[in-house]
Image (cartoon, rainbow over all chains, first blue to last red; front, top):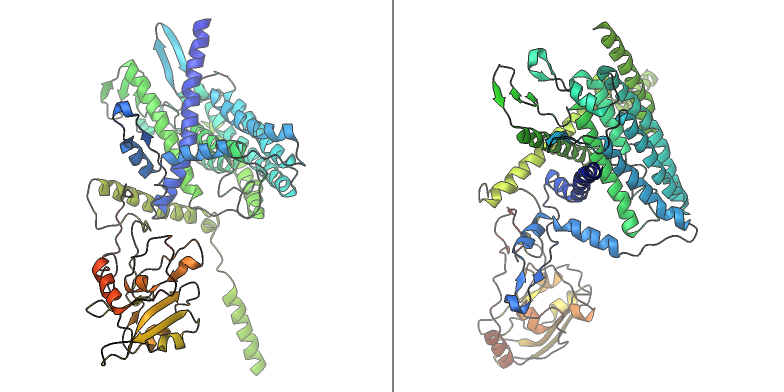
Length: 377
Length: 231
């Protein structure tokens, strides 16, 4: 029993560590990628030096730190230091307990949703079969969607208990946006559920292990469900509450739900956004781009469509799977960041139109066509 | 007939103001979104490639960003830009100014304060033993340069980063006007300080010659390569 618990703790540590690092480094990615896209240099000044004690010869260590500062990586550290040392203000009209609870709620459910996403192939180690998945839930997709919906409560709560009318309005905007896009999100995934015939995420990944077109095209969900993929990515982007769907927060113009938050509580809301981006990227990779699978790679080795075969050891297979998932998630984080720095924000009626009048009917149509095709073939 | 024409023109005007009807494919906005993403990602990959190439010393001619790292790198300004004033000198270091008070008279902001003195050389009318400009009042109109009959005052130092802790700090005394950059940041200016010709000569010997400023930009080339800020 202790071995099982230790294994679970180890896998959770890998997943949580990966997610939090990806989320934290997004502040760096956000600064640097937007800078590159706009012909700027971006963050390059934050750095610190370590003074050496006299018995080590004195002087300061700054060679590597200077380089990291030049790349802007240490800005993330400076951000955290700033957020931790800032005053935590709770408005007099607000509710002390709920005001503190709201950001925790929001970040908790965003992080817990990762537990049913497999990050790599099962590992054979010491005669055991260890799945690289925290919780093997047979309705894992439903679990993730449910947690994503509950996470919205943190946002709405933050708006309601701040004692600020503008924050309340921001919370309500968040509620109606989440409602509109949650439906399109869920319904767009029914297509892939029909195609795979299961809600188990491991089984959905396994279904994408085959090939189309005489073995040349990997049988990824995006090729089976192109419309579903497009609707899912749009709706999921709206779930992350980032530009072009950042009407709930939109700090500079229309004031959002975390107006009355400061310090690390505000930081937690920001972290939630970044964690949600990682979640959406991981979900897109898992459901539509083959998860941790590498094209043509079976447990014994590469089976290329032109008949060649390259054997691969088990350790290499596991590492390739992990690397494949990481690369896919990073690629989607990059892509979402690209969208965030390219498209302008929607007007509110346009947002509602897109959610209710375009994405929702489109996903219903997708279900109908998928159903007919699955029954016919 | 005339009414018909006006109605026709009105209709034309109304049609002209109408937006072109978008096709079905355009109304999905997908092509426009794809174009936008293509443009921004093209910039991203190009600049990423150039930044990495600059690190290993390649493609230095092509800038990877338009950023000027301001305090470390000065932007190239046009030579005719009206920047901070300076007083020109004779060969022995005394000011060319003959104390005619033209600039002080023409100054619309009344920010120039001159005290003239008799010059020993009979060919030279007078000299300014004190010449101060209050930059806190100056409007950078350049009238003083236009009015000067002796080319004694110019606005070509290419300095425009005028900062001080107080209004008094924005005062340019004669030493700073004759030798731009000789006054340290935060050092209080010597208001209305008066100097003799001998003191001017001494000043020119003691202070390092100010950098050649007239008409030459401080930096050559607008290309700013991607580099770390100097340590």
